[in-house]
Amino acid sequence: MNKNSTSLESDDFDEYPEISATDLDGAIHRRNFVEVPQKQSINLMLDADIIAWFKKKSGDVDFQALINAALRDVISHSS
Image (tube, rainbow, N blue to C red; front, side):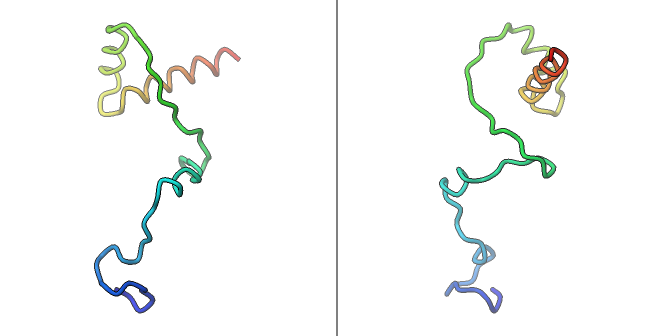
């Protein structure tokens, strides 16, 4: 605990206020200091061989991120 602490008890986390869901709702989502849109969850039916290909191709990377990147590539080339 440092001299500026307002906590009566000392632990490793006493300097950080709790973050609520309301705090996160107002957050600006950024990647490499560039604002990025929030992700939206959907249900999407894809053929099993398509999913298998993306999972194999992605390796350690999240295969859903690879699908998202592929879709962004298609959009950028079709404009």
